[in-house]
Image (cartoon, rainbow, N blue to C red; front, side, top):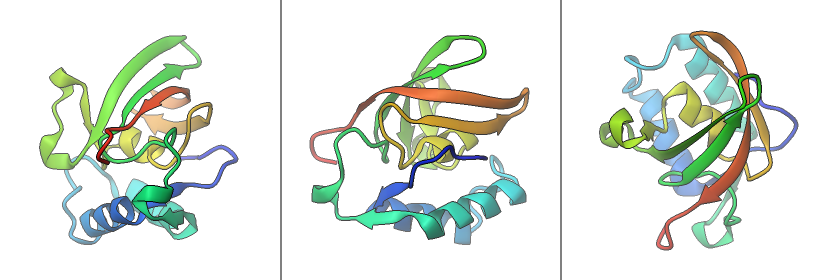
Length: 134
């Protein structure tokens, strides 16, 4: 899971949620050990902010995100949710899935690269919408 250039920005709440899931092993079904280790390393480098200080265009828990896959020029809109609320039919993706962890903490305009079963893909974050009460 290679991030391109920018520093990860997370709310303290999102950071605690992700860290708790990693430590408690709740992600084993969707997360391999290497991905978990890479995410842990990214979390250590993250800039933590309070909810009210979080920029509105940064991906966080419950964000609706529109991304463009660069190679195939496909646009995808998903919502990043807690693992128990994930439902691919409703385009709700777990924060602990590879795509969820790749996007979290990055802002509109960022390019993010990560491994998927078909190989490494690069995505550009086109739009980020956060709930008002996030």
